[in-house]
Amino acid sequence: MNGMYGKDEVDSLPARWRLNYFQKLDNGKYIINPELKKEIIFRKFNLMEKVFPFRQKFHTIFCRNVMIYFKHETKIDLIKKFYDFMEYGGYLFIGHTESIPRDLTNFRYIMPGIYRKV
Ligand SMILES: C[S@@+](CC[C@H](N)C(=O)[O-])C[C@H]1O[C@@H](n2cnc3c(N)ncnc32)[C@H](O)[C@@H]1O
Image 1 (cartoon, protein in one colour):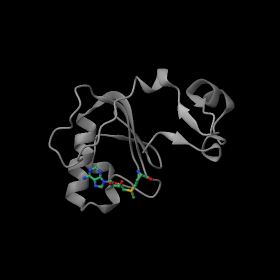
Image 2 (cartoon, rainbow, N blue to C red):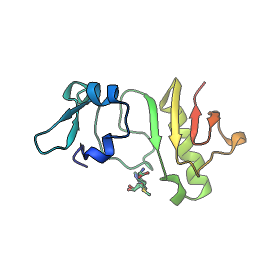
Image 3 (spheres, helix red, strand yellow):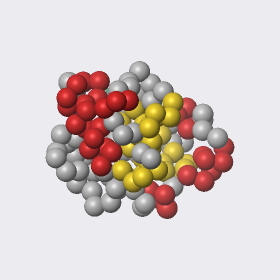
Image 4 (cartoon, protein in one colour):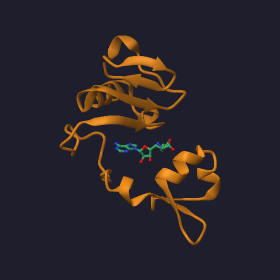
């Protein structure tokens, strides 16, 4: 988790994103532009904590292939927590093979793997 990406990993991005959001190092690897990086808080935490250790709500949550390990009740509790800790208009991205039962969440289904708090 050193935030360094190989050419093959950034090649598939639109050239404009690569130019605006990445910096190429002498070793040929890429790092996120420091200006953008300073807008991001990096923290390891346990999703099972009752309260997430962040003062501000999220605009976007990427939680791909994590809930696949959780039992149903744990998953529903976590999705509720995601909802409570998200700004209105925010998006939740989960794995393509995952889904959230529509009757058990206030998130609106957008397309496979993508939900929105409205
Ligand atoms: C299959 S990996 C998916 C990693 C990544 N999201 C991806 O799609 O490549 C599942 C991840 O869930 C994390 N995880 C499982 N239980 C967790 C918990 N209670 N709190 C935080 N992370 C957890 C594991 O550490 C692991 O990195």
